[in-house]
Image 1: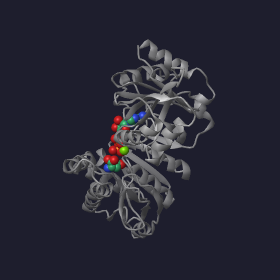
Image 2 (image 1 turned 30 degrees about the vertical axis):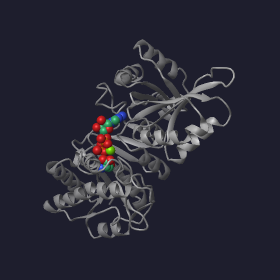
Image 3 (image 1 turned 90 degrees about the vertical axis):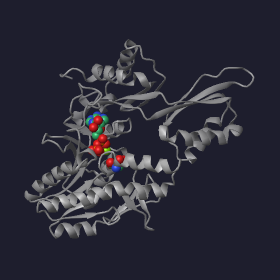
Image 4 (image 1 turned 180 degrees about the horizontal axis):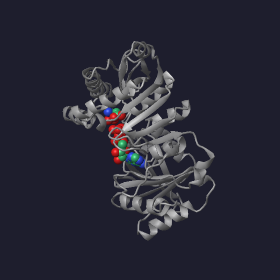
Amino acid sequence: MSLIVQKYGGTSVGDAERIKNVARRVGESRSRGNQIVVVVSAMGGVTDGLIRLARQIMDAPPEREMDVLLATGEQTTIALTAMALQAIGVPAVSLTGAQAGIVTDGVHTKAKIQNITPKETHRLLDAGNVVIVAGFQGQTPGGQITTLGRGGSDLTAIALAAALKADLCQIYTDVDGVYTADPRVVPDARKLQEISYDEMLELAGSGAKVMQLRSVEIAKKFGVVFEVRSSLNDNPGTIVKEETRSMEKIVVRGVALDKNQAKVTLVGVPDRPGVAAKVFRALANTSISVDMIIQNVSHGSETPLTDLSFTVDKPDVEKARAAIAAFKADVGFEEVAIDQQIGKLSVVGVGMRTHSGVAATMFETLAREGINIEMISTSEIKISVLVELSKGEQALRAVHDAFLGKPDR
Ligand code: ADP
Ligand code: ASP
Ligand code: MG
């Protein structure tokens, strides 16, 4: 008998028929003699709808209340999924994150899981039930409801698989695996049989929303091998696991476009030691994470001035604006410009460690397309460039074609 954790995302539980489809699949898997824990997301669009509703009430709703509100999305789905299973004669019990023993810190809207006590889940499984756990939510030791950041049901599933020492973790979604690029944007994208944790991390951090970033970090940390596959067919999915030697033969595993970044430029910053430290310390103190950074050559001779640009997540733009206003007098710069019309294009592959020329090919491809590169950043297995948002998808397709377009590569 195997213990399997299956996670079904928003589209997979998008309406009553889809929920019945999930119940059928879970029932089949159980009838093969497995114990099953199901993690579900809110029905597609529900979380976004709740956020819109909150903003109709006030501009910046308190994060504690947002968590109470958003957790209802998943709570609806667990109950409906348990009912759908019971309706076909499968014993099933729903659990909220708190009931499933998921304990988090108190950072509302992006809480981190501290530990999971799966006692109740084990008890219910041993009594013959399918256990349906609400994704994306937990509870602080003091009893406050928290959520784990957008896409957080992936994290619930991976963390539960680790805590339960599950034999298998399956992430069911609306595509049948991880592709070389988002198949909705790049029609030529191909499904990958396997991908390493590090590559999946870099892709998830570069805008490929197929897996939530933090869930992949936890999978790597606890060695949870998982499969991404479709809830709508039986095609084999993509296995995400520790890197193997043979993976290095592929130079570029995938490409991604992140449209969720904004570029902030501080114009006319005094070019002297300690200034950058002040700027980035102030941003860090307000929990704003900065990705790419570029500093121009300075101009002027008496007090040399420079321009300092960096990228932040779009939802953090207003927080960044406030932090910058607060340190303006101390740091002293002429003005701030914020550009939200940008996209970050990344190519990822562990093979880059041992192959050269990836940057050259990427830049040549963009040059051929007449696309200007505004910023560049690299890691051992990733190269990212910032381009104009309106050209982002064109750039993505061209770069995908250059590295992954030919079937024999
Ligand atoms: P779920 O609701 O099941 O969590 P998501 O919408 O969060 O599903 O993630 C699945 C979506 O991720 C797909 O519909 C696809 O458009 C998008 N996606 C982005 N990049 C990739 C990729 N490289 N491979 C597969 N899907 C991708
Ligand atoms: N419902 C949450 C969201 O939309 C969590 C998830 O779907 O994973 O972000
Ligand atoms: Mg998701």
